[in-house]
Length: 224
Image (tube, rainbow, N blue to C red):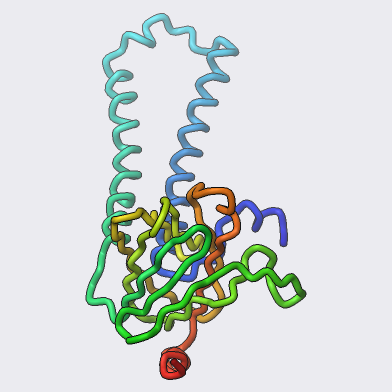
């Protein structure tokens, strides 16, 4: 793993995460332009190159430094609001999965199918075929290229169901049912963890999503 990938986002596996990465780059470019302008002005002030005594009393200058920040905020706000609506959009999901947070493990229930409910604990076996503190004994298996709805709640304290590569993070609040939309573009394993400080074993309740084709998913459903 290179130094750049350690500080960068994980590879996007969902359309929402791709849009989040694009918005991040968009906002960073605007911030770089702002920082460059500020550093240029500070550098010139230090060298006393601004010797015009009427510089701070010009109406045109006041109009510029009022309109310029407003335009920058608009360039950030428009894609931000657009992305906010995309994350909340829920159009006829084909599959609904209920996720419950416990101290300290997750349980999953496939509400569209009967008698499919299981708990997911951290895998305590350390070997070359597993990731330490990230693998679980029962993966959450879902079909790729399928619109899904994830219902998130908790039975004890506040948890947070988070998958960074999918751009999803939702708090699991006792007595409240939150929902997020989900669609994965490619097969594979996607890892996450509880992102809310929920107790002594907060760091030992990982999440693993296994994305498979629809045929393999139906075979797994029929195995119950």
